[in-house]
Amino acid sequence: MTDRIEIPPAFPAVGDVRGKRVVLTGAGRGLGELLAHGFSRAGASVALVARTERDLKTVADDLPGPVLLFGGDVRDAAFNDAVADGTVEAWGGVDVWICNAGISPVVAGPLKTDPDVWRDVLDVNLTGAFLGARAAARVMAPGGRLIFTGSVLGERPARGLAAYSASKAGLVGMAKALALDLASAGITVNVVAPGWFDSPLAAGWKSNDRLEQSILDHTALRRWGRPGELVGAYLFLASAASDFVTGAVLTVDGGYLLK
Ligand SMILES: NC(=O)c1ccc[n+]([C@@H]2O[C@H](COP(=O)([O-])OP(=O)(O)OC[C@H]3O[C@@H](n4cnc5c(N)ncnc54)[C@H](OP(=O)(O)O)[C@@H]3O)[C@@H](O)[C@H]2O)c1
Image (tube, rainbow, N blue to C red; front, side):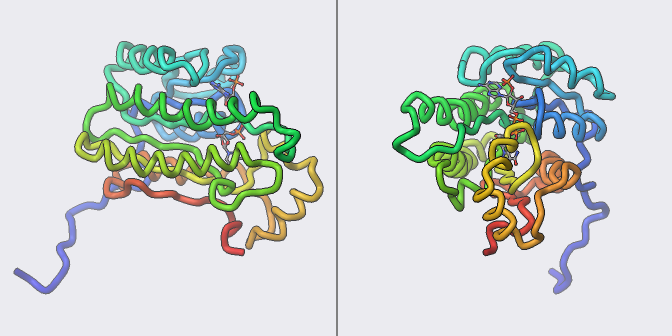
């Protein structure tokens, strides 16, 4: 017994994902394309998932490391299972599964929200993520990592985005429950909640002047996120440096939720 803390001989390298086998949904453009580059350049093998195979090929062409492509819909349980099985067949396992695919409907109030649009958003953003997690949990070994892309809108809603906010708030509840469920399997489950980052999806938000002004007013750093500022959170959660982090929401928002 000593009164000094035990200093380990070495600390895990933050964001070291070399050799990891990563499934990444929503990889055809936007934040997913960014994550594909971040993980591939960091030495991971990346299985790219989206519906539009042409987009996946375009992204894959620019990546330096091993790549698999899976064209299909995350709302389909059998497709998620096929992604898991195909990755295991090609690479022998899955270490990290990032549920990033998401959609955001045109900004509209409840009376203008078609019930089918509501269902679509929940289906893709929430059910799709659950089905990915389910497929991942089936094939992952202890040490596996599930990472969901949430959003600050899951915590502070914006007008006209009820379905989107509900889906992202639901994702946090689901991630926390799955963190409990999968702890005994040695799998951690966390959420990265980006603030406002430029992407094709964000184009609709940017064209709404009132929303754009409210974003700048609320963001402590008074600007949108830059592409290079997001990937580090995912690399951290995928690496040994976060072994003891589970059920957490890592917000990367320039202080949007502070005020
Ligand atoms: N951009 C931001 O500022 C921001 C902020 C917070 C959170 N987010 C979240 O970040 C994630 C990515 O957003 P983004 O801005 O990068 O959007 P994006 O540019 O529209 O890209 C979305 C990606 O998801 C794929 N996708 C959509 N529906 C799918 C489905 N049913 N099955 C499989 N893939 C599907 C799309 O490809 P296909 O259409 O070809 O399938 C595309 O590759 C989303 O979860 C979003 O909610 C974004």
